[in-house]
Image 1 (cartoon, helix red, strand yellow):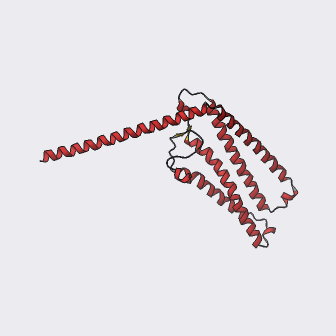
Image 2 (cartoon, one colour):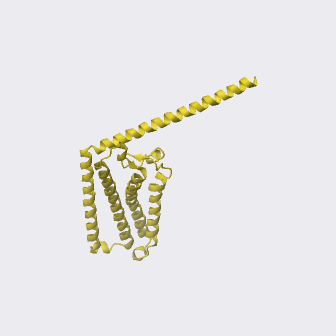
Image 3 (cartoon, one colour):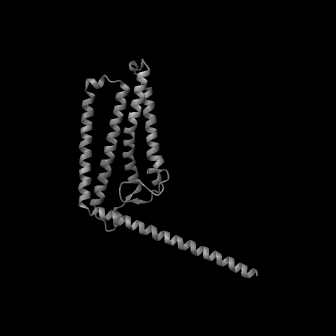
Length: 222
């Protein structure tokens, strides 16, 4: 009886081991298939002339708009009406322009990388894929700029509320309030953009386009 029982246990273990190995093999095959599909998608993008033209136009638009923003900012600094605005408002607006330029610069970088890799020739279709850390860093820096612009309106609202209820505020030149608000804003932007989205990312994977979504963070991005 003990011999039969031992044989049954050994058979069960063998079946379990075979099942696990079979599952692992299927998972590897599925992952390889998904990777090959991504490689072929990236290769198709590289063969699209329309895609390259669109990317080139986007780069040109971002460069022209950045130049216009810098020119406007420099003119604004010389304006008398701007100089009489409260110092804290000026600081807030300066940071707002910084966030706009940061978002624009990130778009120029991402589109330039995209144009370069799609214009290159690779014998292996997977050579057109982008490392996740590159797409995440560039794309989330763009989102950092966008989120920073959004928070500007919150800061201006708080600053103007203080000016309304504190009669001496307009005559004060203290930067404590605005420095505190900007510091909080920057910390929140860093947390939401880099930490919250990327804390559990699998940095070994590669992507087809500049989009930092992975299996780990797709529910948070949505």
